[in-house]
Amino acid sequence: MQAGRDSPVDRSRRLAALEVRTLQPDELLAAAGAAARALQDDPASVACYGEDPLVRLAQTYGLFADLFGRAVSPQYGALSGRCVLAVAGVLPPGQCVGTMMAPLLDAASALPEPPIGDPMRPAVLWATWAAHDLPEEHWHIGPVGVEPGYQGTGIGRAVMAALCEELDAQSRIGWLETNKERNLRFYRGLGFELVDHAPALGIDNWFLRRDPRRP
Image (cartoon, rainbow, N blue to C red; front, top):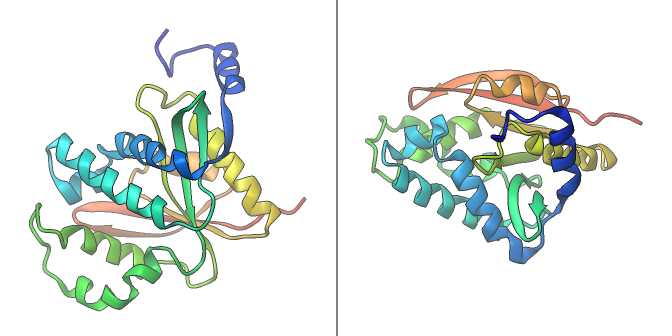
């Protein structure tokens, strides 16, 4: 039976067999690979890197590997044995795109849209995210991705639920952006609220906030 078309019983068994937890340092490159494969066809990846899927895969993998390598906060994942099937990354206050892009925000915002292949093209997208970053102290979530072939099976929700439980336990605000409108329902089901929207590089970007839930 194909993933995403199984019965509720099959789905429950699959989720029960997974280990959902924070990732160890030696698992982060595998997590970057899972995220890159999950998001290489994302509108943001296509807008930044073009139509060649191998180029998109290489670029997104490099980005996520660097991101996880520099992160000081635990990253959440779902594992089957030693295989990372899903990841929900999170960055602490002061390390998200709003902070990283702040010194370049004015310059990147003033750029004409660079062509695909120009290394500054992704900066235009990130500058848009930075310009709409939440001014309050928050934990910035992303990348969030599930290995292709396992999407739609509840694995992504399980990983995000674990991350949200930690945010609640620590009374932390969560913040993220998505460029797929269909993802809004998924995130709303986890307690996120849509607070802003902005276009960049010809794609829509939605910004969502999650306040901690009280016991």
